[in-house]
Length: 236
Image (cartoon, rainbow, N blue to C red; front, top):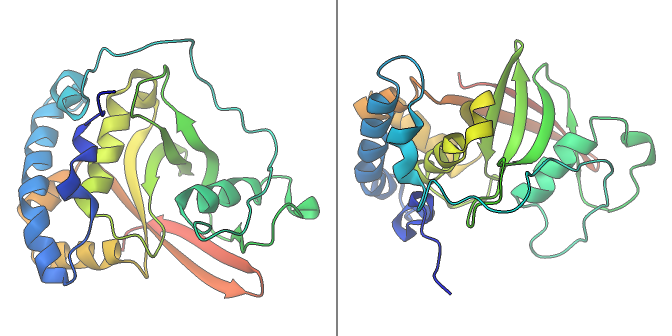
């Protein structure tokens, strides 16, 4: 079986280095590549998916019936070593803030309660058709009546900013996801947040180009018993 190697799956994109400066140096090449693609793709003010198709192994690879979100009820999560990852967090950020809190008894993991003004419309939102190696957008956010598709990583994630950006651009190439403005959302207590702070301090030209086209949000949270009260805001 041939391994799917979309741009977002390049090994060098995935893991942070031990020290922040090493990480910035490592990411420089990929941020430059992504910035150049963004600049070309958006030069007329509208995303040109043909330019961004390099993020997909085969942009024409579509098969099977059309996919739709099927999120009707929370089935809960088992408390395992992998609990607390982006799937569980995004799952709970969506369900716990709909009509579920009154009967939320399906797991004993910390709940995620939205106390901010940016609402979560969906999670794990799939591409229009099944494409090997392409999952779903982590969170669909509504901010000032504009809908964003956001890639999210948990606080303890070691993945790079260039990986997050390339993931959301990969999903943005897929036709239906053009309904959403591409975004990433990072936790304030994460390596990704610290990386962005340094890129902004350095006034990194590639990062500035990328953020002309990809919105960056920050997630803050406070623990209260078994509930994490969180807000999502534009990166300040």
